[in-house]
Length: 184
Image (tube, rainbow, N blue to C red; front, top):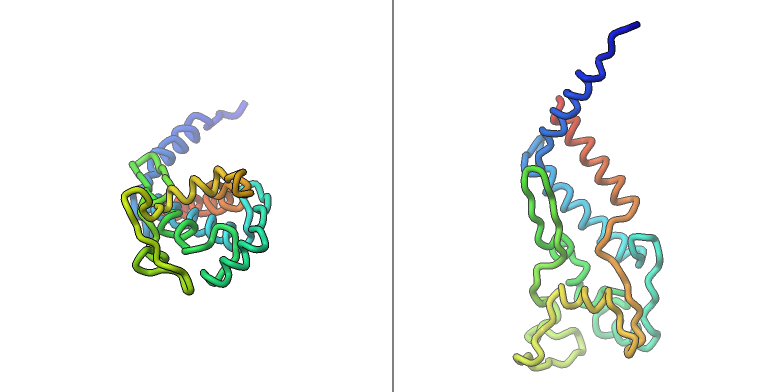
């Protein structure tokens, strides 16, 4: 019977896994930063271009009158795209926390949009006075409203900040490239 080298292979694989470090740069950006950038880009593309959630379910279109108003005032009638903030790369990258062994992404920067702020209203729009009782909403507030929906306003819930199969494939590819560079 031939000798097995399974224990040796197992030890080599475990040693390789221990080398994976989200903060370590190997031939460019760190793995963690590359993953954050790619995930945000993929969510943005899926949301803006395909108007769908991570399960591939298309979002309910905006009501006709609202879509027309939005197009006139903001230049787009796409769902989730008014000021451009909620689905922006900045908001989608949000607040990423990396350690050597973990990567956590939290949506948003918790600031209001600069595009349609009180001092910069939408085209044809009216300035509204910000006040302590009604400040400009932050990206996180908008995302919360978007995902919760509002039955009284005929707005279905729409999820967006989630992985899908294509994003998971992109993650696998990036990790594979990182491992290739690490082993080179």
